[in-house]
Length: 271
Ligand SMILES: [Cu+2]
Image 1: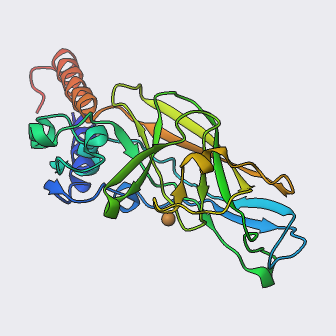
Image 2: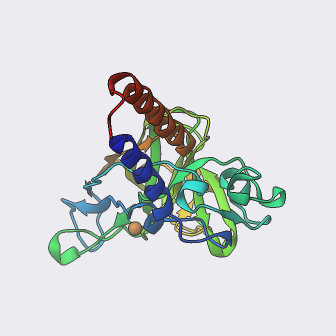
């Protein structure tokens, strides 16, 4: 009995630990709510001219550590919902009734995570070149394990929640500022591991985006790669764990199993 009880209590405590807000919240829970940022750092090395390179190699330094979890709003911030006018409400708002969510504030309840964030560093004196003049960084989705996974550029101040990387081969221009896009997955998708791969390259296009740190207008989607710079690859992976309701069922099931075992194996004088 003790073991199953402690599992049940641990699950309940985990659910309680992420409960910091309730009611309407004005921002989407972010890396601080999810276990911290995980940031591949991009540099340009082996450049012909570190101040303004025309050739070089993109390098990525990345130690992701524990695999991020794709979870629902109710798991990241129990009892919370978004304003009915929030750009992200429809996708990742909890379904009506979940955590007390009113109908007007309800959404599809997709799981989400934005712990991953690209960063770029230039230190010309240390062999890490500047971005070339007249060009920008580009990020292209080269594979994804589930077509149900989606990615969004979130800019709270613009009430912006725009789908990006809409299919394999889709790309954005990136200005090099630390950029955490959101990844979402419908709550109906199975537990397990999900992955995506991105190529980071130098694009023959100036960054002109007004949508935050990523640009995904027609010019960005059509930008070509500068092949004088060797591109780099980064792999992301996420875990989907069973629903808390499943965990609760599991806990109840274990309790039942232990109770039955106790009845059949213990004598009448157990204390
Ligand atoms: Cu970051």
